[in-house]
Amino acid sequence: MRALFAVLLVAAAPLGATGALAQNTPETPAATAPAAPAAEATRAGTSEPDRAKRLDALFAALKVAPDEESAKGIAERIDVALTPSDSDTADLLMGRAALALQAKDFDLALQLLDGVIRIEPDHLEAWNKRATVFYLKQDFSDALADLRQVVAREPRHYGAWAGIAIICKELGDEKHALEAARNALAIYPRLDEVEEMEKTLSISVEGRPI
Image (cartoon, rainbow, N blue to C red):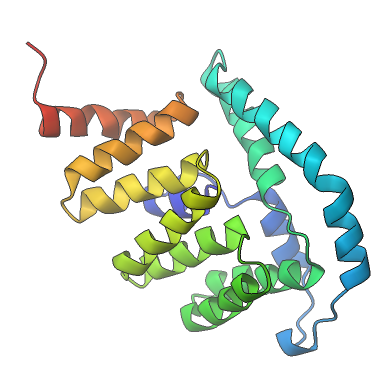
């Protein structure tokens, strides 16, 4: 979840699950990646209800976390819960996209992420990571479009809301930046970087309180 947020703020490390996958992905062409439809269907059918309940509980805990340290721990668990897909092929392509991004081969990363989204249109991290690549290419319009795809599918994706806020602010759209920052904080109140931005934007957009 924090991939784009990390790029924009030079802050958090990449997701642990995605990073591990990228490091362990073999260097074979994406076109030869084997699919495992039966295993994927079984995984999707048995895990989705439990995963949804776990996410609901984690987001509820994040909202009331008593301090920054505990909030970060919960956020890391949310990141891991949101990262896995229901496709081994998509996971393999995500790992290769992460490697391409590390090598700054943005065109290859986009090609691989396009493939993930074709396989799994609801793959949140593929949309989020593609937004990261677009941002690094200074294609802010497409970055915003992908982030809006993320929050349309998971409105509690605080990382995407934070990314929207930061990009809107860079583009001079402070009103929508403030709105997005507040959406992020409503989900993750102890997200300090966004909290500071929200304070600055609220003064700029709404003026100082009397």
